[in-house]
Length: 258
Image 1: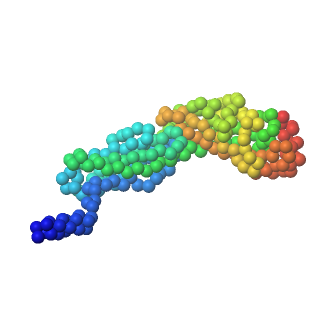
Image 2: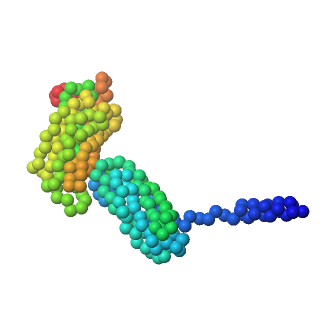
């Protein structure tokens, strides 16, 4: 009889353990959705938290790991259990960065984290190509003009504080410039010369993209721009892309420019 009673009590405890749902974490944080920002411009994270533990909901601290550095974050309480975590960071270099918001209840030692991605895209620059027709079998040079006069569109930065960080880093795909000059008369123009044979554009691409970085007081900021070109299929004289004119005219033009 005693054995049966013990079995029934054990079975009852087992049923209770299965029926009772798991206790929800006392502290949770929501960092929000992924963000996109221009390189060199500040991005502000506003994360929200909730702490159901009355013992320490008023004793909250927070930090943000930006992938490049970790900083203490501002905590603003909305009420006894909810609040906002605020932090700002600037990414000079283009790329995607994992950002982790960490909130701690200092009274209980409870820790909560949430992560989002911040994608920094290059600042746009005006790019012009000359000539606008590309024959990759040509031994000639294509000149790219990169205007820096209007790209710096954030903060109170002075254009006089802007300079090219490393001119050889202004690439078109894998191609690096053979020669670089700087013209400061119009606010700043880079004159980059590339061997046309190094420019690996497929016929019909229609655009070439130049990417590099510019030195500012906040670091080297990524920039990029595109220019429309017409690509001649090497060997068959066919012209593709955004240019106008016949294939024969394009071929004559190529010969004149060699």
